[in-house]
Image (tube, rainbow, N blue to C red; front, side, top):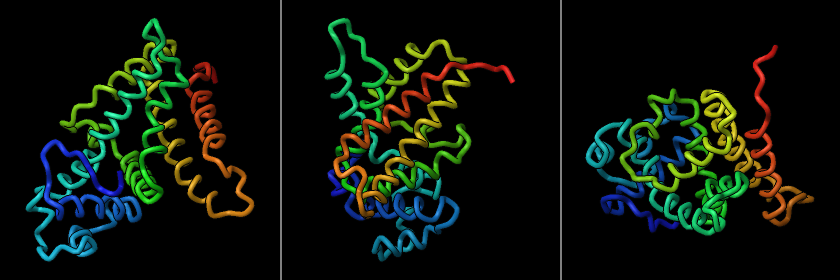
Length: 218
């Protein structure tokens, strides 16, 4: 996926795609407010200093486009996994829903893309929900919406606000695990030479977080 067969709703020229990939990396490394449009343009090798404005209108438009750029492939893969995981009654266990949600990032992106994607999304997690690009995207995500609906059905004993908080924490855990996996790959001894047991433990931890009984007792 990082080798840029990116499926955008409207095909973009090569220069615009390079801007998006560069912006994803720099926003992730330096923060949304820590990098200027000029830096992004220069780092992407563009000659036109107004390239961002030309393609995306503004910094907010660029952030939205960076968020949107990987959604089509992610959602397509998620839908494939949902169809694979459904039992004869059409049900999908929570453990499999988590894999449908997160496994495409683990399995379909190379290490550089995973790092860039994880760091960028970690920055987005600091935003208020009404400013988050998720609230403004026009990219269809039927698989994501189905996963979200099934989460709510399975965890319907949780108050809505608690479930939303836990899903945010689960997403934070996943992106943290993604970055930690990269660090482990460069350490000796590598406690998880195969990614299968590592991600099994991560998904078990996330599932445990989501399933924790809720109590408002202090």
